[in-house]
Image (cartoon, rainbow, N blue to C red):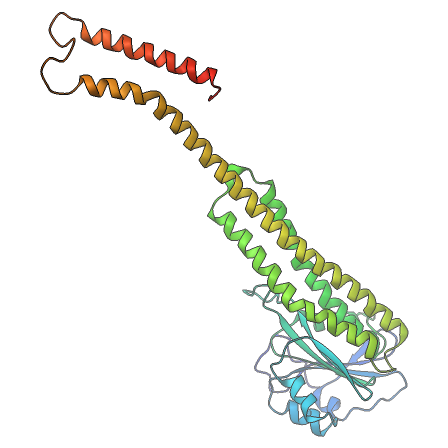
Length: 336
């Protein structure tokens, strides 16, 4: 048997990343590309699932000529149109779904697309960049705890995509909580950068994941009859969870905005308090500066400037008296 291609190998000599034949009981056996191309069910309940690298040469031709998929649909499955959507084409279900990008060095809002086609007997998923969701479902199958039919497989893929989204939402909420717990003295440019990042991620995830809600609704309402009632119920649960996560994104965005406004209000209050203190100090020393400036001019007949007049002590006492009067007046006016 040809060895499985690694999930993150972008230079595969074959388009198959991995393949499984579901046994209808939660398990699966591995299948290589040669067998997958000519596969037919040996037993009732067997389902073929192959995960392909859609950028590999020849994938589109194989979809059109071997599976009889119409050319527009084959182009959709192998093209760069990544907006989530789903529709029924005869007995086949066609969908494009999005997942969170958790690859190293990537931002969560850099969404990854997963194309899907199924006629109830075969399930074909295609991706361009590495996506963890198919591998998670494959691991469940290898452990004997995976989906049992095509409808359950589609549902499992959708659930895992939404589960991955929850991690990004939880991380953003944790970051907001940490920023809110910080004291006013720790606010810095990095704090504002973190808030701006949260707002950008919230907006990006909301923009990218809102169409996914519509795609799942289309699957729940328009999937072929091999998509059973319990699968529709599972999809309905996924839709409800996705709606909650979208609401959480709105809350995260608003929380970040409120936190940003609170920080700016505190900064403005600190600035006003500092300006107030400076204004009071300036008000106190303004009369004293006027007196000392007036008596310090270099002209003749300055009072108390001749020897023996004790002018320094008289002026110092006068300034002290004025300072005392100003302090009493300001306290009476409750300026401090």
